Length: 308
Length: 201
Image (cartoon, each protein chain N blue to C red):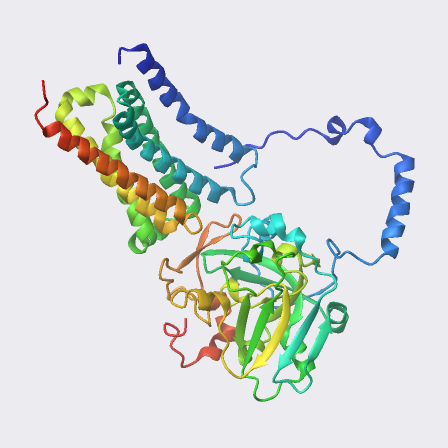
């Protein structure tokens, strides 16, 4: 059903002439812009340069409006519009990630070193939420394995555990008990080292919006979205399989692997189809979210119904 | 429906029932439903349907409390609106949520409990909506008409269960609705039992 759009009045009918742009406002504006350029960046709407990546998905992109206005980020509330509404409390600058555990060279890396130390790529990935909706997003980032290599993992590093920032002032819903904060996620080492596993620092040509996990988040395109942990502050290289937040909350419903799989249903709903936002209608869900060629070998011989 | 107050109540319910739908329609066309408006349409029409359905039952309960019989004039329009919103809820589900793809709809109906519950409720409600005119009452006799319309109760049970299966963070609200439904049902049974007793003259 096509939506009727009411005619939009031109700007000149809304803006009184006194508020219009004159030479004076342009000059004042230029002054302010020079001043702003001299100050440290707030990082809110900065553009990010990145090289295109040959493996990008060719699906129609989800609009930036939907990608940034409809998502789950329980740290800001449980409804889909809460992240966009409340994420302004988050201050992603300065930011650092602490890498610890089984590494020869554990330590801390600041966001500025991350941005200057890795070649950024623009990768268009499909993102499938466990709830049954999906998006196609142009992320900007670099493979997680490049960051891990900096810290030189030992052979005892079998799994990687991630943690989101825990600060109820910046993340207001952390005062609630929806989740045992901070949010935790984990990957097996071979999943973490897979070339598709991305650390994203931006999307749609700009730095990561707060509501999508500023300033740095994980993107694992063949797994359900909740595996792609946001606003990461800690990475631990461990020998035991970590327990991720949703797995701890409802082990029957959310597994550690959480690979997209149309054959393995969630106890409360099936996973055979997905709503492609907005508005690609409903489509059939593909195994490993269509990345099977690249990742299926990771799970050879594993019972995917058992290890869901 | 001779009392003027009954007429006022009847028309208030008949016209008032359109307000939530018109308001939703307006918001949809002015882009006030957020970035994924179809989902809001789906959820809101479902909420309206359930609310109106509970409203029809609440009329009897209000009568039990106040003894004011004139409010029964509102019951039929509320019931018809409940069906209208439930039907639009189902159509929005089929057209928007399922993208109009029959194969997907069939699969959802086969696999999803909440879809089965909702569909069952809608089907139970259909004969009630179709018999919502005076001639129908005369054709099937008032006695049988009233008997048929007891289907409202199982419909409400199914609808609350349907809402409860999809409610996540609104579960307490739906549970409260279920409790209210149970209370109204008990009251109805109580008045039935009272009615059977020979009345003192």
